[in-house]
Length: 419
Image (cartoon, rainbow, N blue to C red; front, top):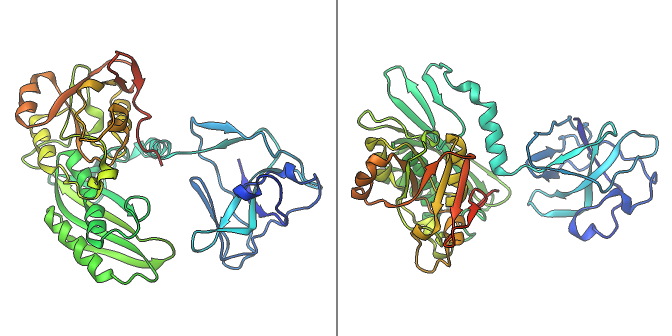
């Protein structure tokens, strides 16, 4: 359904202080919007959609299509017909200046053309990732100059089978100061976590790092670029994936880093995917959970490379690194595998100070591995030092559930982070 945006000339009403205004706050037909953006230095942000003003400040914005997801909310406020127009005002969005701050002098109205029943979509990270994976399903089996794509979006890393038969793992992750680390954090910790997040994805596939690339969007007043590069190079080499290239730019906002890591499987082992879990498998984790943000462990964790490689060598069924929370990441394994993960709250290993299973399952940023193994590998899992079993896999609705101390079952798939 086509969308366009236009500035409103006046802005008032009970919702003005919240940065949102519906057209019913203003008498119908009082104005006709001009479908041009007159502030080329402004940008508009709306959930997963981003509209930017044309450089000349007068180019009509292109039509944008909406992604359809299962999470829908019908907009019922603000429907009215404008004078001499078939457009209907649906909602208004705050305009952000180049520093990312609200500009309360200008508002953007979102219009639907024509005026037929409309469903507004709010898309979260999990929904967007699922949509990307669905749209990328045709990539499986695609042959490129490098090799054949075996695993695309939807797992911790892509898998490309090279002409020599080697499984090449490729992953990318980002770190944004203010979201993944506190502003003012030491440069060494920022660099460490930026690299470690991608290395952890390689660990979750059972692989070893080979090399890394990095990009940095540096604030214009950033004065420690040399130190940042040295620290990133140090940590990349520490985990066996030397930094061999990248790119830098400067811009508004906080420091943002992106790290791509390529890896390989050792000893002919197959990559461990999220989609391999089967009914009867047992569940283990590689360490205690919870309290990562409060304790600072989120910035100092050690990617579980050796544990992942051991799991791959033993023939683990499925694996994922716990970044968004045990519950949400377990749900991803269940949905990818078409089965249900049942986690026993009484068996969860928790760090000291964690209040209970809900906190342990939802805090996130643990970067431990959740491993599913066939029951015949239970003894080997114990020898490897993994903690558990914390649950098992059974047939049922794909996802994950938590069984509490009273035997009550809770949906675990919603426990964790969803940006």
